[in-house]
Length: 158
Length: 174
Image (cartoon, rainbow over all chains, first blue to last red; front, side, top):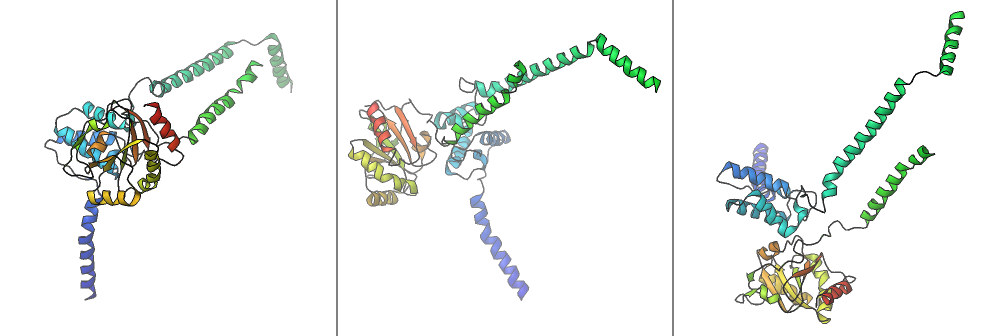
């Protein structure tokens, strides 16, 4: 009897939990072609949710992210290209929604800095290497040679 | 001596970084300019909150500098913003509302309770016009000049301290 009650409770739990699951999960979309589904995944992963800052729209529960996903799917079905869809979102929500900011007069520093830093680093390494090479080929001075000889002789006499 | 000066280099780098990071602390990360600045207000044809049979479009915003406020009954900060909007209306600013993702009943209740500073309210139950405007969090406020071009955007609610600045912005485009 107790077992049956328990099984009944479990069943009840399962039944009542299903709608909750369906509600909180990101909606599932059907596309005619698998290529389109893949493009949908890539696009929604590369668009940043304007409301939640550090989340792509593919995983955000925010209403604006849901609206954007809906729009991406609609535009894909209309046959728009990836670039057109990204442009569409940028025109409304700004560059902010792109996880990969485009190269323009405001972002050249952002894109260029890594290369500049690598070049500076390379320059510093080159300077050090040259210095060291220079140090290795320097011959002993007469004074140093004398001192060295003195050390050798002392060792030998003991 | 020259080498000694070189030792100051990390300190300079630290000071430079510190300066920018310190300034960053005082910045609001959610404040960013609208992508629609200096652009025409998007085209639309919608009914009004007041009258389901009415049709309004973007020509509503021509000929006068207008403050367009996106609001909703379900948005708590919109309630806090209403006194400031009423002040702005009293000071002669033309206000048009966009009732965003709301129902007519709830929208009207909201205005009955908190006052109605708006000349008219555009009814946008599906949030389509909001999407065209790049609205991501209500309330948001757009300043539209007499040619229907968006000149200024205020994201988040207008605090009592913001009122003066908004009045100034309105005056600038008159």
